[in-house]
Length: 234
Image (cartoon, rainbow, N blue to C red; front, side, top):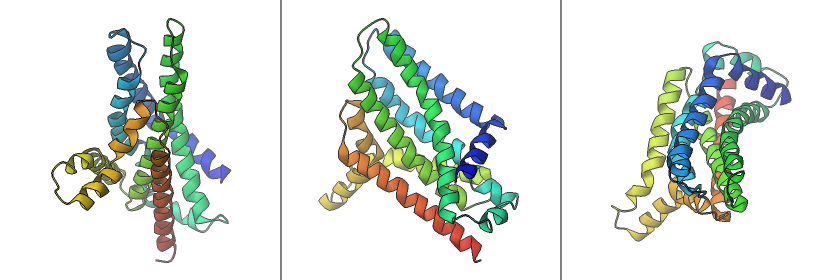
């Protein structure tokens, strides 16, 4: 698995993709940091992390669009499928490589927090709680987009599918306001990424949110593995 992780992680920086993703994430992070913290003269990072919710939803499909589709397009997936390594290890290796790049991009938030702490008091427990929510959100979304990338050989289709899924996840919470059936309203609220993410932005380490994001990530990693399994025997 370590070989897969090294291969995929290196591929991010052998092309502009890794640099563009990190640069875009850091730029938007610092834009909101300047807008809400420096210009607003506050050490409260809740608004910054709230805005990063949408940033993550729309940047993660770019990060994951090539993970599975590129191998399928270049026919190098056959080498992986016949290699002496389990399909789950291939999927998890690709997933962890993307997650590593995502974590590097998220470090920009910690740098902003350190800069703020040099000038004023910062509640590190709240910052770390927010970071946990940001990482869990990314971990779940990367797994979803990885599965979408496994369904096609086109990176463009993988990216567009990821954007569509992100838009759905962004808007699903608002559907709870228009449905009348109590059980359906509760189900939609439970599945809302925004509802699961918001407690972290308030400094609350929500165990239910942790279980939700981790379970969703594991579920879509399994889906991706099953997709590869189907391709092996097709």
